[in-house]
Length: 558
Image 1 (cartoon, rainbow, N blue to C red):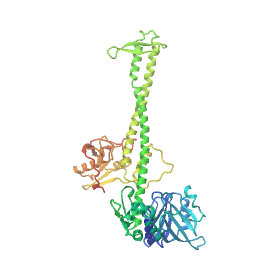
Image 2: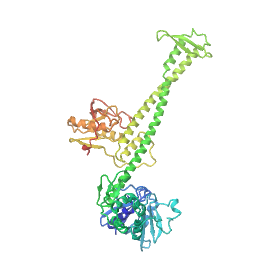
Image 3: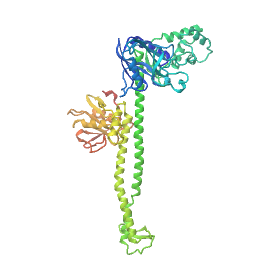
Image 4: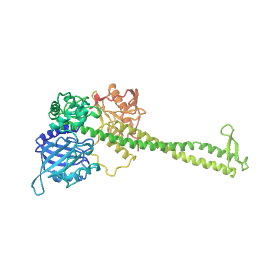
């Protein structure tokens, strides 16, 4: 929660750690975030200045995002002005949501100059603005139209603070006193939120629990200033839903499990890194779900068309029969008939009514039926294999949906994307990042035996392909599932190990919500991959089947 209350103490903490720190590197991994690698008495730490609408903040970051190939213009500007600079001070501007970082720098003539970065932490209006002598050198974002009309943030313009809110400042005792004198019995959190500058609603609610009731306006001011300026700093992450956030002290008005930290910046780092990671994961997962479901829908329409064509051509043998019966009874037919009734010598001479074209001779009518028969037979010869291929594609894509739904980390999607590209289902991107390492399997230690479980079809192929011939291989019967390997090391495997591995296999399958799921197991030497088969597709023999209830078995996870 980046209200002025939180930022005030965050800036004070950062100032105590980073005053005198050198800027050794400047990077900008995306359009909203700037990283400053600092070196100070605590060693090297990366300071993140984020103007992201949802995750705006100033603090440390431990897990940096990768940098683009070409640095953005604002990054190049910061490198020019801030590389080698020293942080002189980090402070809040008044009690606004603006963190001011003062840098001691050298200009092009090696003269000492002071440059100031204003980090405006204001939701969708967040911005980073670098100034010198009060003049803007550059900013991360151009001001939106509704702001640009009242405040200019272009290079060369004089820097001006945003228009202040009509609320009392915590450092203005008279203004605070007037607000408390105006209190007329409304809800205390609402009163503080609407009258005191720099408090988000959760902070106002917590402050209200401390300030109210008060005997006089002076007492209310004193209690409020004590809460805001001298709280017990106990950084934590807690709350549920919209209240899930970073708090600099132990808010009694916010429930949920609380995780405490030594530094506010560490709590901020942990919270926002997870929040951004979860969002990136959800977006990636949704993108892949949409892509695969789109392909499934397209193949479903194709399968329906192929089925209809097969159904339409399913009476081809009837056409052949009619042609044969006409040919065998040419002597009976005189021509000019619109239909005839002939005996079917293949079916106990039962009468068969056959439509005729009266403009054609009997022989031509017979040839017309033979041509229709030949055409429909060719159709079946072409369409039936196509339909079988479409069904295989659909089955395969259903297995990919299972993989996407069971992914636990964003890196798990790399294999799935690679799989779709290598299968020819999706085209490769124009610029493809080179993979430097493989994503790990799920690994378990089950009563001393190593059990490995693939996360997707690419991993399933890799896992099965690298297993030793005497390792035990498991897969659910008639369901999509992960491949599971029990490493035997030439030893026999106890039944309880097989059962646990089968339960894991069943959990990571389409049947995870079922009971008594059949899981086949056999030695790896009996598992073969057919030529040109899709990733994850195998055939196996000499197997046994265990019936188990799905279980994730987190207690065995390595």
